[in-house]
Length: 353
Image (cartoon, rainbow, N blue to C red; front, side, top):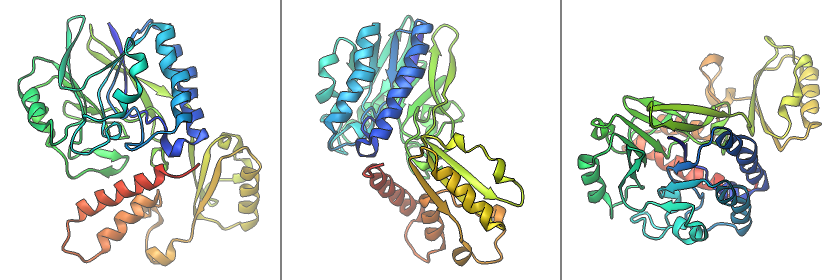
């Protein structure tokens, strides 16, 4: 049996922006379902954060998702098991009130919402599914982790020592060693793919923020016979960063068509020829792009003796981290960074792209 593993699809992300709804539609129509049909895969396991906003969802996003995903499950005879992620639950201390139960009810023949830790039997392959762990279900979840009869685990976990986004590690969370008895653990929640010991964070299937730029995105196929997990890349991207250094690259020959239908960020390292730079920017602006941002002139913040290669101007989260690191405080800096990243993510989700 082959099973498709999805996670963190975040329906309605970025304030239900048409750009991100279109991006999800394209993934389902051109990448996901063609692959499932070609390989006769009839079951999906979704590891949480199906929806994006814990408090509300736009009817437009619901309608688009119903047509592009849920209706296709029914049309193609595909079933899905799904666990709640933290973005699917209204309260932070319990999973009881969640968007999955309220909004997916019309598709209960196709969708099985797994509300409690449960061992699923896929043709003899036993996988334990663990919903988002809250204060209410913590004891039940810990008992399941310690005693369940499963070889693999699928969950929505917050573990310490893994990257939440590329290059940004979570220093809090649960100790991953409590899962050491399992052959393999697959988890949603963190948006970049990584593996440590027997734990694999699968990362998102879609680019949602600038932190996803140039970070490959995959959905995964689990073969229950061979116990192999295959990553299938989603080649459709939304974010494109250009590190501008005209001492190394001739930008007169740069193919700006690769900027089409994307958010563009130009990070200027060296700009000696102002005329060529202005023409390069004009060429990009003449393309059908969503947005253009230019980041340059960081000397006043970083000092003139800083080596360019050591300067990271990835995004706001890294600048926040740098500021916190430089602050003289008795507060826990790791917790400050985590809280600031959470606030930044919530703010970005409210943007209308």
